[in-house]
Image 1 (cartoon, rainbow, N blue to C red):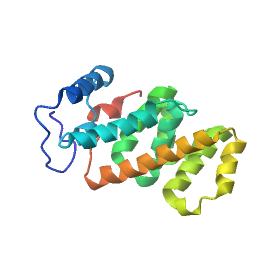
Image 2: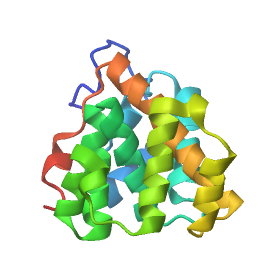
Image 3: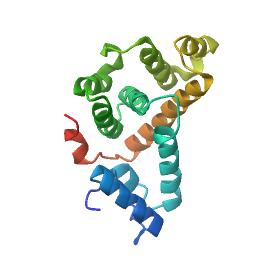
Length: 188
C-alpha cells in the first residue's frame, strides 16, 4: 500500500484479515489496483466491511437500474458536491460502461448538457434534488419517476444510491481522500 489514501494518519491493520486480503486480491486482479476508498478504511475492518458491503449491494446487486445508471447517479451527486475522489473514480466507470468518454465528462461537469432520454434525465433530476433540496421532495416527484417507467423499487434504489454517494462525498472531502492515479486515464 504505497499510495496515501487520505490526509489522516490512520495505520492499517497489519496483517489484514484473510478475508480482507482476499477481497483486495480480487480488486487487484479485476481493477489492477486497490481503490483508495477501501484503503482508507483499513484501520477499522468492521467499517471497511460495512462500507464495501453497502457499496457492493447498491452498485453491483440486483436492481431495475443498470450498472451504468447507478454510476451516472454517483457522478451526478458527486458533481453537485464537488467530490474529487468520486468524480474521478465514478467518471471513469461511466466512461467504461457507456463506451462514451464525452458522456462521462458531461456528467462530471453538468449532467443537464448530456443527451439523455427522459427516463435517465428524470432519474438524475431526482438524484440532484435529493442532493441539493431533499426537504422539498414531494409525491409529485416520485409520480413523475413512475410516469417515465420507474417502479417503486427503482425509486428506492435511485434514492439509496444518491444518499450513499452524498455520504461518501462528504467523507471523502472531510478526510481529503485522493483517487488512485490510474482512474484518470481509464476508458479515455
